Image: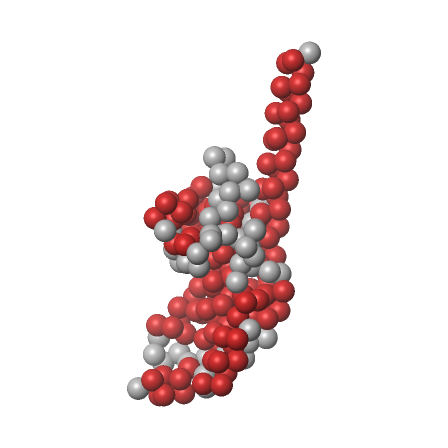
Length: 194
């Protein structure tokens, strides 16, 4: 059964072992909790479409979790993803930051619920559609027995690159806003002292 599964998925033992030996590029950075920008190129280069879809989803989940940690009441320097133990960010206390959301689509929905004005300011409808396209293709590959390869790998890759770009830009925007708020607070408190 396992051999059949690998054949269906298009994976071989050698491709799996070679991937796992170089998997550190896919891991979030210890201090920021963010995946490396180099990971995008490594993910896109994956030949196995199952692994491509899963790695892309995990990458975007990590970026969405980082965004959910920012904003009101969640300073950007708080990072549940830079845990000392692998997998520690899945604990109940840290999961509370994500509204209980664990999957890519749930994390996207939680972000849109928390920041309803983000659409149109930080995200376009096209950005959201890109993330949903990734979710849809990944789910079809994993759950639909008759779906054994992507309909359009190029479209998936372009959607992944677009989603990575917009989520990183949104995080940068949150950081800039946080820095501006901190500067205003410091300026207001120094004026009050005079």
